[in-house]
Amino acid sequence: MKNAGEQTGRKVSFDPVDQIMDVMSQAFDPAYGEAWNRRQISDALLLPNCHYLLLDEHGEEAPPGSRAAGFVLSRQAADEEELLLIAVCPRFRRKGVASALLEQLVGDLRRRGISRLFLEMREGNPAENLYRKFGFDAVGRRPSYYNRGEIKGIDAITFALVV
Image (cartoon, rainbow, N blue to C red; front, side, top):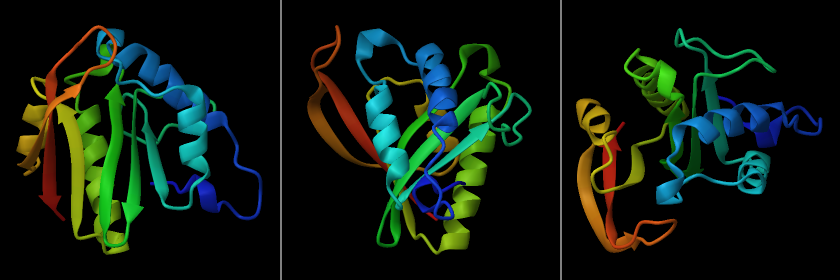
């Protein structure tokens, strides 16, 4: 996992922003209004507590400037981490990219001494199967949380994983 906000005194390269935006534009259905805009991604990558990972279609780290197949973006608070976004381009789904993203994220969290990983998703999101496979448990619900885009009144479910 990379921590864009703590690069060695250099200005952060926004190449990862292009890679993340490319994946997000393909992966998120605009009807739900879940995708972040370029400014939100850029601002997040400037924070020292935010981490990201970009993988290619083989589950390997995507080189700078290349087309990524998927990404994960997370934020640390004390000894906990929040998975902010995870996405895989539709043509690379069901090929292990999302599993590789989560495996590498969890490995990084263990190395950093993180105790729990949280995420929030809309009810009915097919990614729930992947999260449960990794051992995430539902720990909360926000009724009618998703009221963006064309969708109204969908609950948000909070999941947690003990790392």
